[in-house]
Image 1 (tube, rainbow, N blue to C red):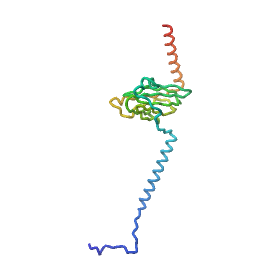
Image 2: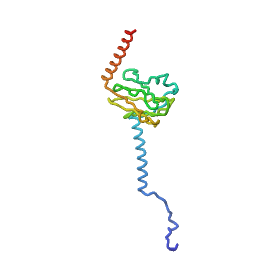
Image 3: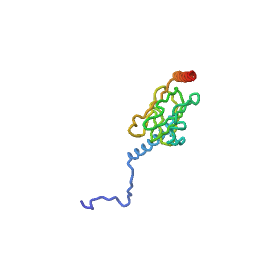
Image 4: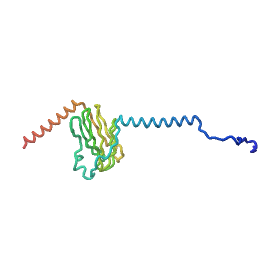
Length: 198
């Protein structure tokens, strides 16, 4: 084939590069999808109450088990329907292992670690925190349904990692009130027995 047989455009015609109409449509669709996804994430974040856990405060991991609220981790009732829980993560357990709340309870959960980096995820909620030694992480949540909500460690922390779990047990207000009445009666009976022995 000789170069004479190749056709060349006339000098007065300009060659222009273009984008195929199908490619244009796919690019437009991609941009629209990105905008839709960004809007969906933003709307879901506000309606579902997504919150990023932040460092609430700092603690000394060397003395955390002997002083402060994490020395006796557990749940405290602050007022009507208002609770706070202090959870201590350490290889390979959570303390407390069970948190019992009445339905509708608003709770602030404070979590820290005494040794390694751990995770704290409560199933079927937006509670998911990274737990760092020396740092207290906090998230708030309202438990509107009766049921059990297991919590687990989401950061691999060694051989016993699979045994790191606990449960948030949400019960009816009547069951919660009767359980507290039984606990208070047991405390009073113990106090009376101690006084009788003294």
